Structures are given as C-alpha cells and as structure tokens.
Image (cartoon, rainbow, N blue to C red; front, side, top):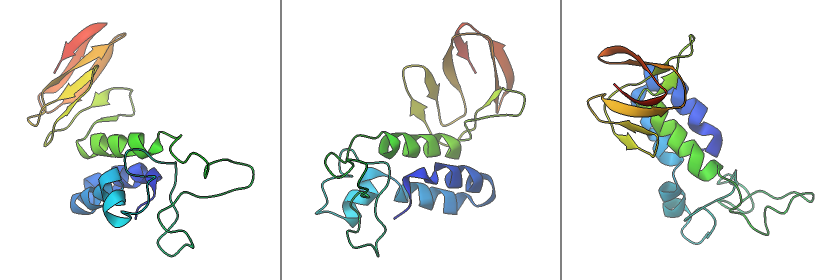
Length: 149
C-alpha cells in the first residue's frame, strides 16, 4: 500500500516512468485501500492522513499517538482525497513551470468547478487574475475570467 503522500512520487515518475507512476497512483486511491483491507472501515469513503504498513500490528488502520486522537475519528484529514487528485493531475501533465505558467498535458480528462481538461489537451480555467497556460497547442494568456486553451 502506497503512502498517501505519494503524489510527489507520482509527479516525479510521470515523465520518466509513466507505467510505474500510474501503478503507484492506483495504489493510493480509496478503492485500492478498500480492496486490500475490506474489514477496515477507515479508508473506504474517507480516511486519515496515513495508514499503517502491511507489516504493522494494525495493517491498513490509521496510526496512533498519545497526543493525537487519530484513532477516535480516523477520517478527519483530506490527504486521502487530495493526494490522489493531485497525483492524477500530475499524470495528466498539469503542473506549474518555473516561470509561473500552468502547463497542461493530454491523455485523460478532469473536470472541477474552476478547471477542465479534455483528453485532447483542450480545456478551460476560471482565472482570478492574468494567467499563462502552456498546452499542446501553444501558450495562451488571459484572465481574469474564463481562459480557454
């Protein structure tokens, strides 16, 4: 079972080892956790920020520490939802570049209230200010408002 913080691993591997990156991404989803640990309720619809390793005394469950109440309510952290989403976006080539532009790739789709990406690399961003988007069709500048690329 991959750590929930594996989005950075997925991001790093996406360019050099795409098959490995996709494999690691699949391991970090709630679906994978549920399949691996069907009797563990945390990690089904929501989860903690980390799970115990398979060799731990409580595999697939959340970690424990005297100072924290993670065991009492082990679904109070957004890492189990945000890290797979971030990893998926990185697999699609959505990332900032060194100049502050937003790079977008292709090969999959994503849709939220403020950003959409089609498999062909086209999409739209609801920008609050001026943005530059580097896509497969070149650079597009725009904003504030809807920026199509």
